[in-house]
Length: 34
Image (cartoon, rainbow, N blue to C red; front, side):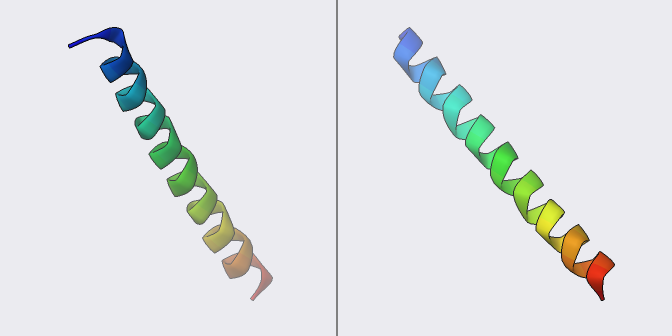
């Protein structure tokens, strides 16, 4: 496997982490407002 493969894996992993934390923040904000 070349370095491009690892770069793609790391990038997708980071994107998933960012998406999860953003969704969690949205839920926390919505739950705090109610």
